[in-house]
Every structure is written in structure tokens, then in C-alpha cells.
Image 1 (cartoon, rainbow, N blue to C red):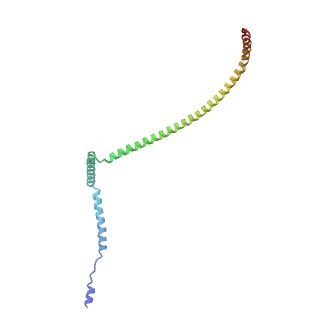
Image 2 (image 1 turned 30 degrees about the vertical axis):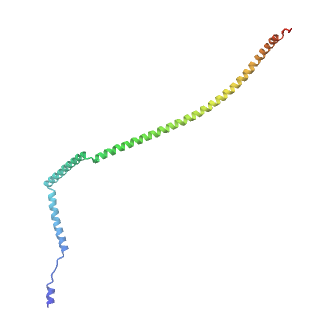
Image 3 (image 1 turned 90 degrees about the vertical axis):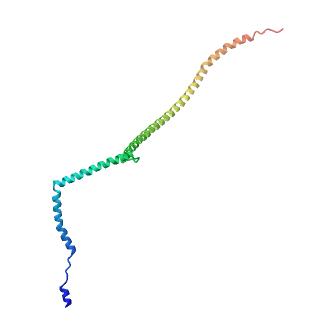
Length: 175
């Protein structure tokens, strides 16, 4: 009998997970409605705006304090580093431009030197050919001079022969 009485008196334990779910869904809708009402009021909007303004004000004050600290401290700020980076970039661009101009100028100079060397070589060849021509002209002029002067020498030699005989012919006898 005692067993029968235990069976009759069984304690029924509730499912806590089920109770928790039920309580969650019932309170969720209540809390959602309450927050919707709170958010939709003008007062909430004013509170949010004031909090936002306060945060912005605090950030501005903090930024100003950090800027003043950075001015005093020897550590460069982001602005300083950014300014130096801009200067470096502009310097690199100028160096690139100078390098390009230098290479262009060197190329033009090399082309000019090559043209000058070619021109000098052609002038040298032309001078050599002129020297050869001048040598030929001088030889021809010598032959012409010899031919022109040959009859004159013969005439002058012929004139000198009779006068020289006259001077040699009257030799006085020796006693």
C-alpha cells in the first residue's frame, strides 16, 4: 500500500525552459511597446540630441587638447607626418621630371655629337679629296710651267752661248 500511495502523490515538476520561453515572449512585446512609446516622444529626441551635442563638444575639447599637447611635445602629429609625406611626394615628382628632362637632354646631345662626328668625317674625306685634287693641279701646273719655261730657257741659252764665246776668244798671247 505504501507503494500505491507514493504513486498517487507524485510531484509534477514544471518544464523551466518552457516557462522561460513563455515569460520571454510575453515580456518582449510589452517591452517593445514601451520602448516604441519612449522613442517616439519629443523628450527622448531632445535627450538624444543633447547627448550627441555633449559628445561632440567633448570630442572637440579632447582634439584641441591633443593638438596643444602635440605642439608642445617633440613627437610629430599625424598632420605633421601627412605634410611631410606630401612634401616628399612632390619632391619625388620633381626628381622624376628632372630625370626625364636630363635623359631627354642627354639623348639630344648624343644625337648632336653623332651628327657632328659624321659631319666631321665627311669634312675630313672632302678635305682629303681636295688635297688630292690640289696635288694633281700642282703637278699639272708644274708640267705646264716646264713646258712654257722650256722654250724661254732654250732662247736664253742660245743668246748666252754667243756672248760667252766672245769673251773666251780674245785671249792675249803670253810673252
